[in-house]
Length: 212
Image 1 (tube, helix red, strand yellow):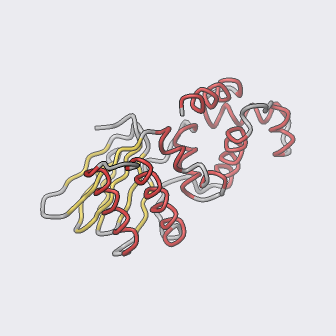
Image 2: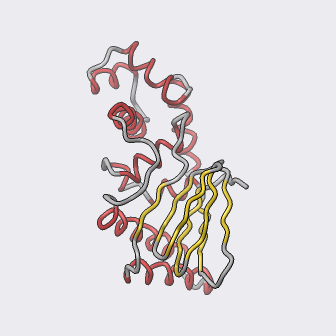
């Protein structure tokens, strides 16, 4: 199956098998996998393992990761690439093992969702932000990311992020000057990377920001 939202899967205890676009992936205790929308996948659990799946809307995830998106880290690259690039990453996996703080945070997340007391949504949002902060701090170097390792991918990510951060008053000339390209070459990069023209991607970002 596939979704229109991002999906977070955490192996609280035990193991499971994820089939992602015909690629079989074995996950064990502490593994945390993030998949973007429209990725075909399935999860198999045949014993007493505990596997937690958390669906998150794109706009919600963008709001959660707003601070992270200003840094060149693998989550911000993965997130922006998943939304705007034509060839997206299927997943990113963090291996946190028996990390006490992450396991406690996920438990708290579940309790907030079950009890739904006053400010429960704010508590869950802040907890997810805390989890990804810990993953970036402690496990980014050992994370599995199937693509997005080439130098040109990182450069194009920076270009899209620059448009995101300055969408209210940006133009093609400003982008070209920032990245030391000609306006024509900048337009070509945007089209190759996203399948959209500069005006189309700018409109897409403005609509998404208006909806968030």
